[in-house]
Image 1: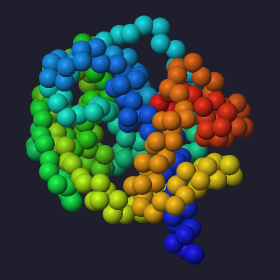
Image 2: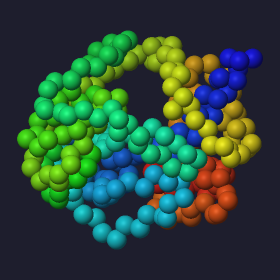
Image 3: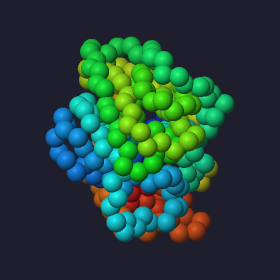
Length: 267
């Protein structure tokens, strides 16, 4: 019984997490921040990156008045997207970053990662050339092992993200590792029972619970459940900047899933 309850909690957490963050991961470059030049080996220009993220599900709809280039990306051969930070606390409406106590000073040293079970890996060295000042978290990718920048940086080991206290306009490079796993290995992986990522909104609706269980019915592994949730969201919801945010006293996940069915990264 305890194991069944745990699996139910994990399933519900997965859908709550995916609803609010899946598009951040998979559409970061492809949708909200389009790539101007198509060739992966040529210089690419990313546009539209907001200065600050509002990760609230009740945020006002995004209105893009103009497209402003922010920086050029060169040699991102294997990177599917760049990221600034990763949120780790969900209060039912928004995700926030709460890893401040783990910050360490970064001086350009090479970092290592404890990754197991991969079949092979590839490395790349990506160059970022600012067009406008970059402030706060630096655009990098997962498993960045080194950042080459003369400015002083703060590093958050758990998220593998880097922060600059002073705005920068100089070109920098970062080295990143891309690990590859077989489908069999992914299916055999277990969920790490970290309570920060197993949170559920207190006002989660019953039909949201039922939807999560229906989508993942008959699936055993956490990986298969995640892929099922991902595929369902991709097939049934529209990425659209013209959306209505949740009305007062309406649970935001429920509103997005059953009423509005369109939105952007924060939904």
